[in-house]
Length: 599
Image: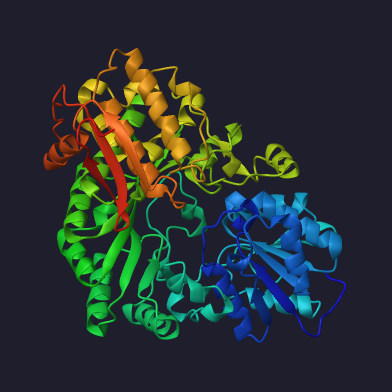
């Protein structure tokens, strides 16, 4: 297959390259750490290109130069669906400079489109599918010694012009036996705790036994739930504490708390070790009862990611999530009481979704926001992404329509050549497309995540819309053509900016004036939220204080609203117009009603 045999192999591994988009979010490529560790344990020289340390927006050319400067023999790319086209552009550019470099591609999307990818993109030599810790060293050994790859499972490659796919590699059943990843291979890891203030991930296990119709894990991990023992997980945690001094850890697992008994055993072991860490995990709400949550809180659990997906009971059944929404709300209430924060993730754009389902989802999100008291960053609303290997893709994959580019998952600002690839090969780049939504207008749907996620960062406005049924929210926006005039930003890049907040408030203001509600308190409440955001977000000192005029005493009104747990809308005292000073104090924003006539 390969014309050269190498006495020494220099292997360079490239994480999902979000740096190409100018995204500043830092991440630890745990999967590649496992791959690099497996290679090093077999004596190979493997390096991870630490994109956390590269300047944002490095571009294809800049990243190619970084790769070439390492003088690699093999370059392995990890590609999530959002960066799949970019990785192909990178590998093509790399081959233009050095055609002798062997390119290997792995990750969820390449795993599920392996044959099509190798057929259509000659710059990719090998696709390694699935969990490859037990096979990757054999792949490198075959390349190094000019041996056939046909006996290694889980590969797709060319052999004398013929596309060859070997039988699938089995899952790593003995997950307990996987070597601990060598975190030292990532230079930026020392900064995660000290500078970035981010948790460091530990892989607690893999797999989810459920069968949600939108999820590709059904195929990728075959619904096989695997969890490491508490002793193994905690040994890794102690290593991180000793090496990096971090007190914040996220235990990565597709569904950490599936086994109540094992989760309780983990909490008991953690308590016995007395590690004094703050930890996070992912879970289903219906696997969390009061006793389990109490033990998790007692042992330092500070945040749980909950995939809720929809606030519609009908849709819960159709997508086979099957959550009891009353139970979800009760679980979140209990978490809040125990001091555990949560991230609630929702999806819109299902083919079977109707307007009533969307309305119920928005209402449920806002009700969770009301009870959480945790801040708007803990609620997510995603545009449904077509994923290979999911039951929905099997059903609707032949009828995809090109997306708008606002989705948070397919967030790339693609170059023209990449856009052309996406259009030509929807079967490979499905995440940049959408399923048909016969019951919901696409123009309306594309604006919903951007609108709602910004609205939830205007807390008093959002809670007033929830509490006052007379405002008719969210139907009032979904039914009005003014909403379609909203120019949405990207629901990843453009959430939480003053420009976005202003857009949202302008839409609401126009709709309510149009409906004869020009005198409603909502207008003053929006003005208050905007002022709070402007002062809180100012870093240059230009708006560290702000004075706004209101038709009633807005600070008193907010106090009364808060006192009712945001359930009862106070009646503003008319004729009490006032000027309010918003100013920073102790990293927060405070207000003061100014004496009449002062301004």
